[in-house]
Image 1: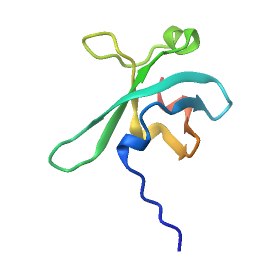
Image 2: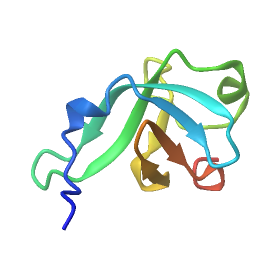
Image 3: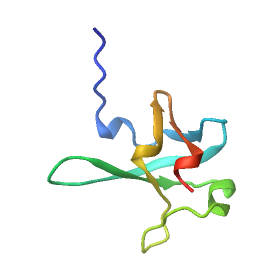
Length: 86
């Protein structure tokens, strides 16, 4: 049986792409619910011009937030479902 666990620090710096291959940026931080440990958002660093043009959620500092629920695969890249972020 494969070990499916991954530490959150292992996600930091990974490239975030859509399932169609569009690059969005890199994982700069992870926002989670402290009581439950539920992962809420990925905060992007080095966002691409493509993601900047989309109407996505931002925090009060203008950082792009992607819902963690949009993540469909994790490996060398984090793959997100583009329909779930707009």
